[in-house]
View 1 (cartoon, rainbow, N blue to C red):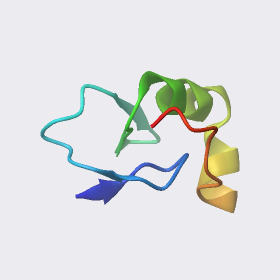
View 2: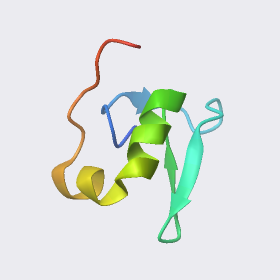
View 3: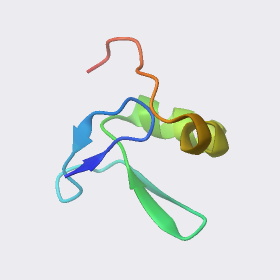
View 4: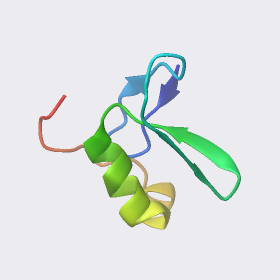
Length: 57
């Protein structure tokens, strides 16, 4: 398991279709919304950590 960098949820990399590569590292997401949020401002989530998202989970 790994953590979604946007909302902090546990994500199984082998089961999620939502992933992206940033600065050579693969990041996994629980939803397309979290993936889009990360891709819009990756440094925000890497610096500040997960903040939670509106309940789309």
